[in-house]
Length: 165
Image (cartoon, rainbow, N blue to C red; front, side, top):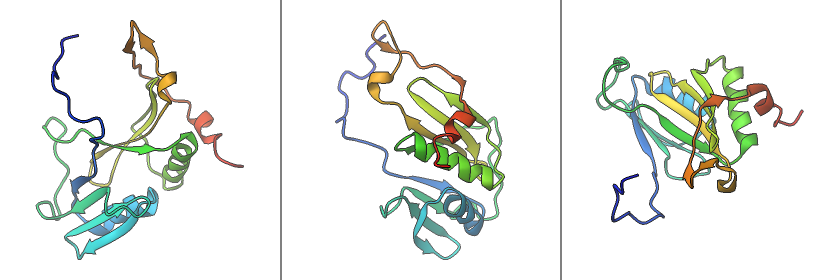
């Protein structure tokens, strides 16, 4: 494989937050806070809201600055494919699945990628979301020393079995 990054950035760099254009702040908050369980950190009327897990200033910004009352982007256009929200372990991912199921939200897919387990869905504005958990690195499948990701069906019943009865 060609070396596309001869001078890599510091490995401590990560993605801190994402801002999403939404049509309606209340509808977006009902999903991100009411269903997924993020906590509202700040709201700026009907123009913006900032939500997070664990009291961080914000993991997700929701705004209507250029999208108030707007419609989702067409499928065959450029833009964000999905944002990925990483859960710390399998039990918390199972809890996310429970929340979605109880809210009647349909999954677009559920995959075991060998390195991770993932649930795929859209928010009320059509933004793609991946809810996932990473497996420990020592469990990642490898082939000839390279990561060998796969896309297999995720056992949703097995995932839900992680929850206390």
